[in-house]
Image (tube, rainbow, N blue to C red; front, top):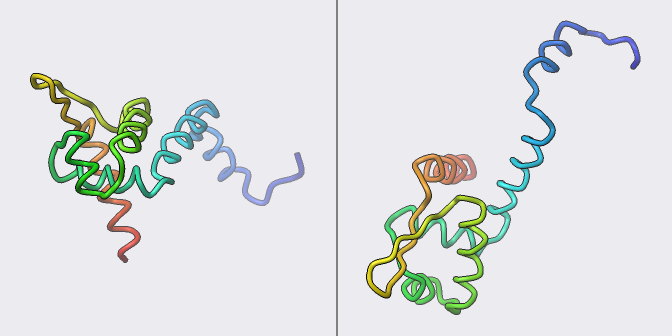
Length: 110
C-alpha cells in the first residue's frame, strides 16, 4: 500500500467498515428494489396488507407475476404472509422495511 495522506482517517474507516459478507448481503437486499414491479408491490403493501388477487388487479399485472415477485420479496425478508382461511395476505415484514421504502421515496423527491 502506498503512503496515505490521512492515515488516521483510513484507520478509522478500516475499524468501522462492515465485514465484506455483510456488505454483499446488503447489496443483495438493495437489488430487491431494482425491479419496478417489486417496488410497486412494496408501495401498495406499505399502505395496507393485500392478497395476490387484489395486488394483481390493483397493479394491472398477472397473478403469477405477483406471486413470483412476492416469493422473491419473502426470500429477502421484505414481506411476510398470513393465512386467513383460503386467502393469503401479504404485508411488509416490519417497520424497518417501511422506513427504508419511505426514506428512499423521500430522497428521490428532494
